[in-house]
Length: 154
Picture 1 (spheres, rainbow, N blue to C red):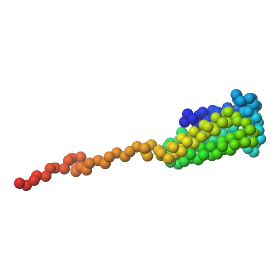
Picture 2 (picture 1 turned 180 degrees about the vertical axis):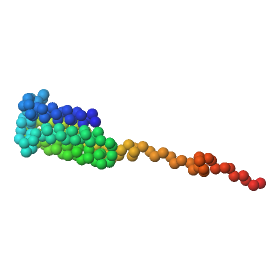
Picture 3 (picture 1 turned 30 degrees about the horizontal axis):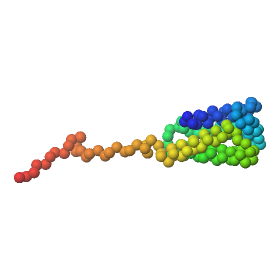
Picture 4 (picture 1 turned 120 degrees about the vertical axis):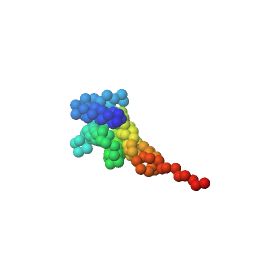
C-alpha cells in the first residue's frame, strides 16, 4: 500500500506540474521539461500524468477493498495496464525523444513493483489460502464423552 501511495503522490506532483506550467524538479537539465511538453505528454488532450494519477488512485482504492479473488484480479489487471502504458511511454522517451525524465522513470519503476506485488498477491491468494485448515477432531460419542472401554472376557 505504501508503494501505491508513493506512485499516487508522484503522479499528483506530475499532474500539478503539467497544469501549473512550473518546471519539474529534474537533475537531468531540461529532460523532464522536454518529456512533459512533448506531443507524447497528452492523449487526446488528456495529460498522461493525469491518466497515471487516475490509475494510481484505482490501484490504491483496490487495495482498500476486502481481500477477495476478484479484487486481487482487478488490482493485477490495473497494474498490467499501468506497466504496459509506462513501457510505451518509456519507449517514446528513449527512442523518440532521446531523453529520460527522472520522475517518469521513477513512476515506471513504482508501477513495475506494484505489478510484481499484485502478481504475487494474486498467485498466493488471500489469507484463507495461506492459513492451514485445523486438524480434524477426534470422534466422540454423546455430548463430548469418550467411548466406554470394553471388557475383555477371560
